[in-house]
Image 1 (tube, rainbow, N blue to C red):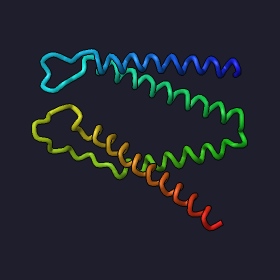
Image 2: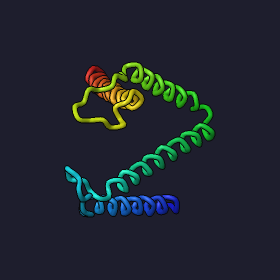
Image 3: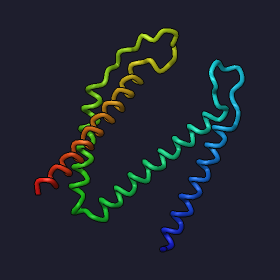
Image 4: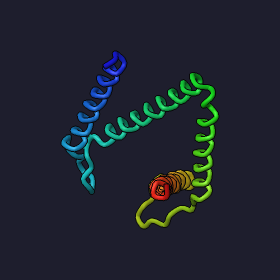
Length: 148
């Protein structure tokens, strides 16, 4: 085991331990008094920790991609093409999304606005498109092996 892999293992176990503490607080930390439905007391802390992990993951992914592009400039074109394809998928998902406010009885919250509905629709359609691409790639790979 190299020194870097030991450090990464320690960081991984540290993040896992912190996540387990937040999960324990979320599930066993009590509930908000006076709410109609059961609402864990530490929901906001748990969600903020999840957001922080997502931001860290996205940042590290971008940094490693940039490092890979600088270290291997010959392979840069392939990476740029894959990022362009991902951008096209997001644009297609955005064009499919709808911003019409929903008619929800008894809900007057802040999330039933065109910007949030467009974002949610883009994420949903993007997930559907990527799932379809993955299933198609798996089928193509398996069927091409049968005919070889």
